Length: 102
Image 1 (cartoon, rainbow, N blue to C red):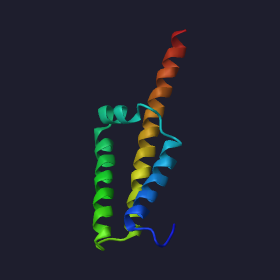
Image 2: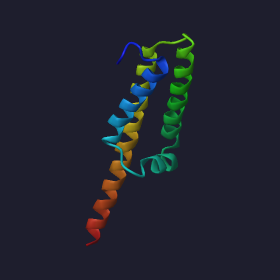
Image 3: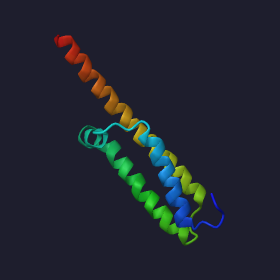
Image 4: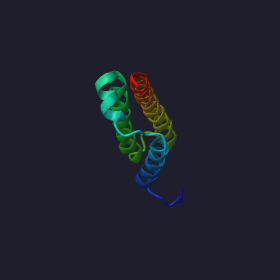
């Protein structure tokens, strides 16, 4: 990262890089499935998104550090990957059921 970048740009770049990592595994329909069947996990994910937003605002004011933002991003990423894994398992079970019908 360029040392002349604003904190806002740094946070944006970090968040975008992390989302790209999540996208490598993300399956369409994951969010809808998790919201319906694992609401607590969904709430944790959205809670982390709020925390990321709050950290980015407070860090610009010098209240927190970029390291705290990075740590929160890692938790957010892990929650998303957990959601994808749960959805993938459900989809795999559905495929097994379909195969057993034939």
